[in-house]
Length: 255
Ligand SMILES: C[S@@+](CC[C@H](N)C(=O)[O-])C[C@H]1O[C@@H](n2cnc3c(N)ncnc32)[C@H](O)[C@@H]1O
Image (cartoon, rainbow, N blue to C red; front, side, top):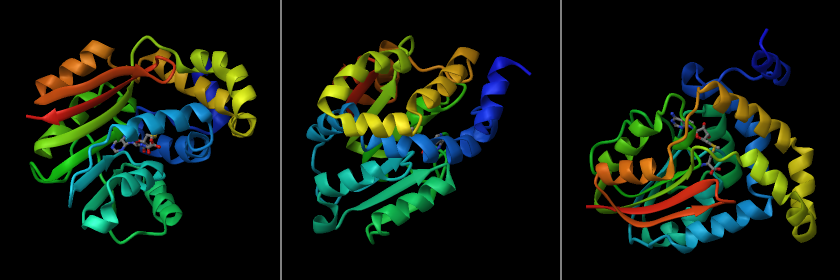
């Protein structure tokens, strides 16, 4: 057994490259990421930054690709005032377990449709959405699946619609960057850090690093990602490095 296989076997995790990561995400995300992502200070700040840039569109048809446990859906509902203006959010994910949890956590709101779907090949018609969110989702698709994910995002977006993307970028190791952040989290938000450690954040990140080392998942570079958005018809409004410089946040409008 290789070191990689041993780590995964101990963690009870299947490989991300199998079944497009569905069984991996059912376990990994639900056990570790979703609870941390709402508790750590650095995640909270990142969310604030993203949602401060979101343009409010009346009666919007909104798609969140890879919604996970729905933490962004709650923010989208609030920022886009969906319940007041009659819009609708389609929250899709490859993991049925995540969708079930999201529905439960959010109390199954009437204007949100949770649907199992694959970002590589979405089941929606061309030009059906005003706004598309892809937050920490497409970048994880094995074998550079994000190329298809971005293509799909712009296919289903209406001309003039907005896309918001948060992607990890190639060459940056979030686990190392996060370790250097630990003293800051400790001083400024010890409760969040306690939760992260309790939920074995570092171990989870180490598992992920193995997928990167093995080459199952290869993030785009900053320029590659911006270029891909442009190639697919996106006019870049913002492309900034963020989250300890490990990510790029892109806001783009379909031409
Ligand atoms: C790190 S989580 C992020 C979840 C959420 N966007 C957030 O910010 O909390 C990545 C999500 O992408 C989903 N995902 C991965 N590959 C996918 C695919 N091919 N199609 C749809 N969802 C996918 C996973 O199931 C998981 O819920």
